Image (cartoon, rainbow, N blue to C red):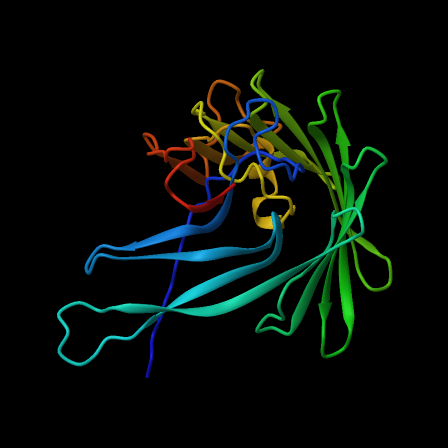
Length: 280
């Protein structure tokens, strides 16, 4: 019987652009679109795999593929070997303005169907998202409503979130405040729950490089990379912690999530080599 290989990956993703031009806007530099990412290295046998992939129509993402690794070893092998197997396919639909308006995720093993509906303001900026999770057996659902506010530089600075059930009852509300540095890189996200204001979840991004963010040209606000798209460059340090109103500012709580790397290697177009690209 085949065994499945559990994959844990860290995404290093960053800024946001809705342009479909062939070149980087004002510099005339080559623009690249990420195709494969979430790289997994099997150290024992030297195999390498990408477990996530974007499929394009032109420069628009129309599908996101996610893979799992399956043990295909034969009897007598010194080290196990693996092969990719498609696990999930997410589809994206567009309106006549080439804006993504619907993200359809596959049915989960728990029979939950998740669909995102996206809305835009008069400037073409994402203004609202409804993330609907439907339990197929009884057709009950919950809706996460996100609303986005921008500063004068068209950067998202406030996100309000409200979750309701099938009967319209609210059971979760929170607000996220986003802070950027002078280079336009996201530095801090502070999330406060409306019903529990005594603490907040603080996420910090630090030690940015000066190179191009490989996810800068992702035109779809997928939930798993939403915040990481909002920066210009590539962060190399990240942590998340819970801060209580009683916490000492001189002795902050230890992070419960964190990662740090010394640096990246870059391709000839200035993008990190932790992904594959198609370049115009």
